[in-house]
Image (cartoon, rainbow, N blue to C red; front, side, top):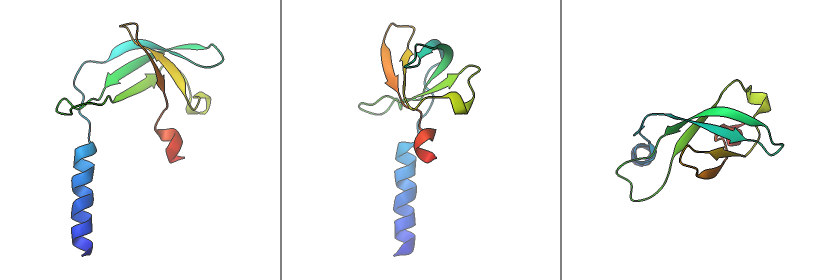
Length: 91
C-alpha cells in the first residue's frame, strides 16, 4: 500500500513539471511603492496543456529580502500580470 502511494505521487509530480518553451524576455517589475526593476521573464508553460500559464521572473539586482510578496510584471507585449513569487509560500 505504501509503494502504491509513492508511485501515485511520482505520477503527480511528472504532470506538474513545466518545460521552457520560449526564449527569455526582458520586462519590468513594478512594486507597490512605485519602484521599477528590470527583470527577465522565462516562459515555463507546458505546450501540451489545454490551458494555464507558467512563468518564472528573475529580478535584476534585488536581494531576496527586498522582494515583495506580490508585484506587477509588465511584459514586452504590453500585458500586465500580478505575480507572486512561489518561494514566499515555502518560507
